Length: 93
Image (cartoon, rainbow, N blue to C red; front, side):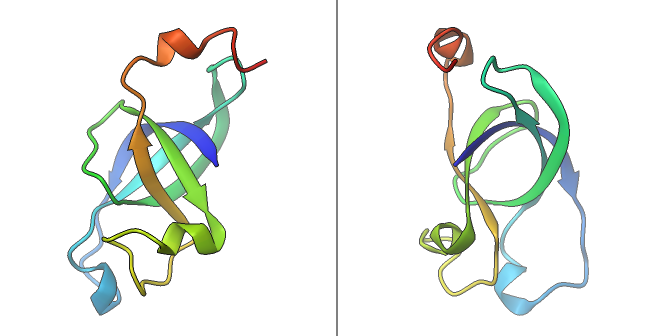
């Protein structure tokens, strides 16, 4: 799993049928000190997040085990919003 911040909405009119009802976001990844990295990942929103939310992303086959993604072909899904990211600082290093 990865931690990141929601940084952009991906607008796509043309996509596979399974992705039509879901939102896609660009996530800027965080390092172990919760600082922004220069790495981004596109992820399916499985829970309903907003811009600048700090989120947990699961990848690989695990990203297909949500109610939203089901049989969808995906490599990354947002599975949790971190309510108080500042409380994690210092505990991740």
